[in-house]
Length: 316
Ligand SMILES: Nc1ncnc2c1ncn2[C@@H]1O[C@H](COP(=O)(O)OP(=O)(O)OP(=O)(O)O)[C@@H](O)[C@H]1O
Ligand code: SF4
Ligand SMILES: [Mg+2]
Image (cartoon, rainbow, N blue to C red; front, side):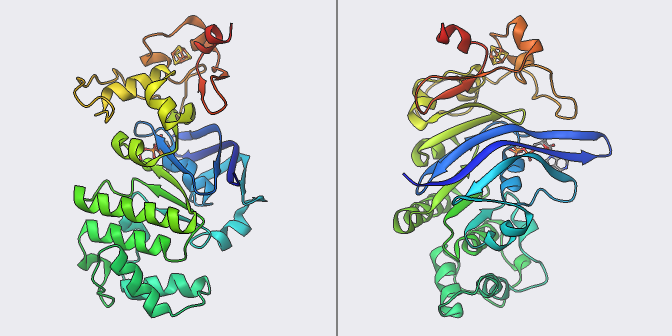
């Protein structure tokens, strides 16, 4: 298997008037060509911040403080990522309104993506082809506000895949869409993977989508990775108390009849993160060590790891 992306000990903070928000606190993972990685975790766990860091788009207040991002054997930096962005690595953003320019027609915006990346073929034909693919009858002279939220999301998707990226990062790509369109988009992304070997990072709150689409899963909380494994391992050999809580709190495709039990309490304030395990205040199995020391990562199989002091028992 060819590795396409490797993220090593990534730390990203946002600097606000209230202080430093440690949004990403040392995450590492790898992704192979053609693979689908699902990322789950409650709101504020650092999913978008880690992906924006990879894209070099942490914004004015955001800063990647440490870590390495290697794409196709090349370490990314502010310079080279700019050339790869939109072409080799592309992202479907969580908020589509922030990524379409309101004063330019969508036809112009899509053509511009192709021109910027020196598309070799017929630009007009490609734009029409992509809009048809996402189910938007070409209305090239229309402006973003002339489309519904769901249509804008589909235009965004067309724009992000128009250059056949090797890696697509999709941040909640289908949340705003109705179930039928959602299924169409997922099937479209599946087609691109099969046809071009595109790799996909899929952030979603929908565990059904994860179960159906992902090869492997990362569970994030408090800016850290709590558990990582194949989709099977995450659903059937769940190790981390947070993952167990998450699976009980949202509809679980593997157990649709189960009663939903919310995780009590709130995620940590990342302006002042806990010294030890970020989940300590909500964890039913918390121990004394969890308050003081960040948990080590324990290996359960070649593909399955979790970051929790309960792993000490498994290791013994
Ligand atoms: N531009 C920003 N300025 C300040 N803080 C930010 C900024 N963007 C994100 N944060 C903070 O960083 C942390 C991680 O946010 P992030 O958006 O990555 O969460 P998320 O997992 O994507 O959540 P959601 O599921 O709601 O999209 C949160 O505490 C959030 O408030
Ligand atoms: S390290 Fe401790 S607090 Fe954190 S999840 Fe494990 S048992 Fe719970
Ligand atoms: Mg997000």
